[in-house]
Image (tube, rainbow, N blue to C red; front, side):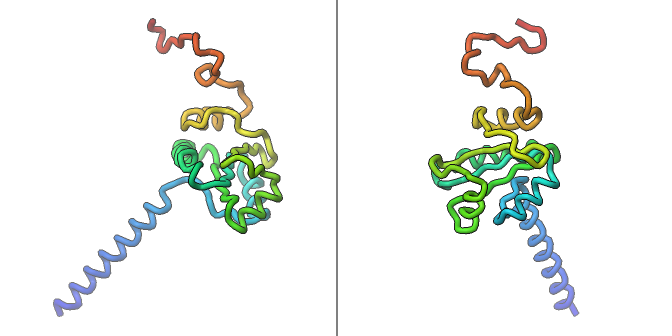
Length: 159
């Protein structure tokens, strides 16, 4: 009799543990299971603000990939961030069809309303990516402009 009760408790505990592990795995908002052109085009048709990180070399672009994941977590619900591994066999075909350069360890491209918009040309920081995704057609913010280093920004009207 008590054996059945212990068995139920163990089963319930293992089920809760498995669910919590699955939630932790799905914690990141980055989509990384795009492997062919049909899936990619379907994504572009359904989303309006997409930033794609094409990775040619995983080791040298790990820092960028981590920042990309943090930006995805910040922009959840406002933009879609996708990582495509161009070094694998399936990803290599997709990158070739999309004409992604294999010269650099990574490249970042923005797609707006289903079409290619522009190559990402801003700083590789979480705040720069978030600012870009909030207004992809806008000008480069003063904080990110390298020629605006001598400009002092006044926040809240205090000097």
